[in-house]
Image 1 (cartoon, one colour):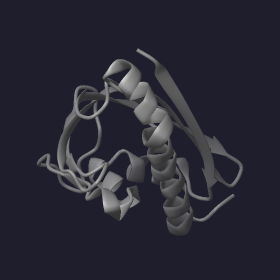
Image 2: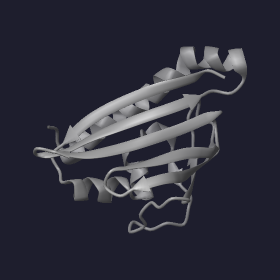
Image 3: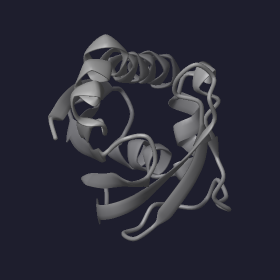
Image 4: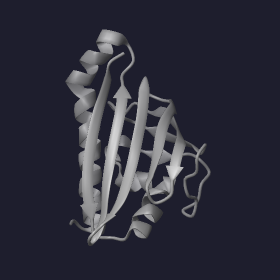
Length: 155
């Protein structure tokens, strides 16, 4: 199984406390996901719910061609105000391991997303990644960068 890596970095002019408060709330993920994915958190959480190790989050998504899918991730690691990791438990990928890192810097916070993912179906999956999955994943993270900058500003 071939594993792919995507790394995105962004600095925003808010405090580490503000960044952690926003990004550690599962419901805020929908706010930074492209609308064409029809992303809906189906877990019974409120805006005050914060991530913790072992937390299961369920979603409905339409990643390709408007086809609706169920997706489940688990928050496997949390070091408050430093990082958290979500891993797919059920969904479209053979592997999804997404690290979210936060570091206080002069004037704000530097965030790093490090994603390792794999596509099922062997050679067909590798072809699908080359043709459209890699581009779609990059588009999602580029969209997040843009929306986060619109919400919080840019350093």
